[in-house]
Image 1 (tube, one colour):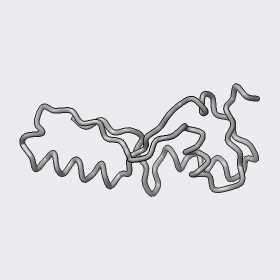
Image 2 (cartoon, helix red, strand yellow):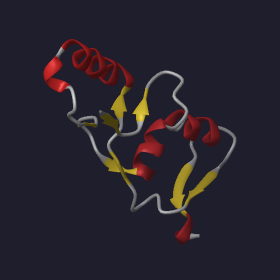
Image 3 (cartoon, helix red, strand yellow):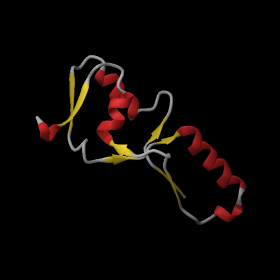
Length: 94
């Protein structure tokens, strides 16, 4: 069993959503964004893990947590993915 964190890549529907939302908005409020932690994993790494599991019988019945090398707050990841000058703030800070 593979348990991936948030998966990112070209056209992903999570981190790229924030980039699309930030284009027309001067400020974007996210509830809990300063507290929530993410450790996104690249889609290519998830695909490689799937292939390895299919090729190795020793992985049968085992569980694997998949996460990328970098972790950070949700607000920080959203700022990095932003396509415009938008500022991401925690909703509680408004």
